[in-house]
Length: 224
Image (cartoon, rainbow, N blue to C red; front, side, top):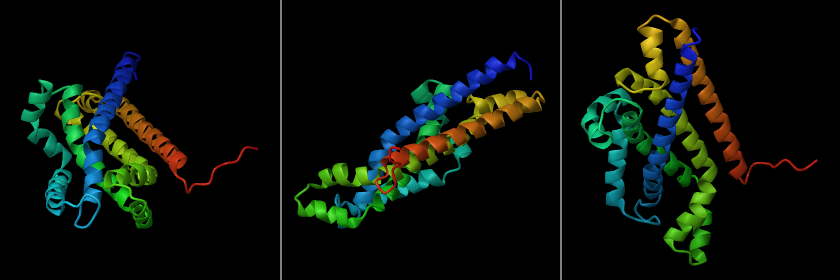
């Protein structure tokens, strides 16, 4: 591989990390509260609102069921309205965020539903309000699962970020298509694949390590 391509490869890696980081952050800000609400708003639950729960659940399911590449094309007008353009790194954050938010919401909902119901009843018996139970019991207890869920979301977004290269996004996917495929440079395609694999492995390992630090059930290594 030409030495001239190394700066381009580095720049594309940074673009991918930027897209993934921003879409994860914004997607979590949207999907986090949504997931908490979905987990606590069925009939008879802490924030009981069954009708709204059903409606939001349908919206989340519809968003998750849409293939990502179709989603990217379908929301081009919205992307232009938000980012001022439908191509480039910043524009790619819009569909990535829209894909991430409902996915994160369901992951967080699942993590919270796995919390022992006895803890909720104990908090209720002590007079805690629903919001206090959510904030001081459910979220802290579900935190390891939430972190693992966010790790899964990040890994998925790395794959999605490569996919947006096919429709005008930048990053490693765009580099692989323009140089590896269109210019018949298989070494560039191989480099892109290797970097994506390393990013996924690094994010997965980091997420699992962070989750283990918050898992109260995990054994702690004592000082030697």
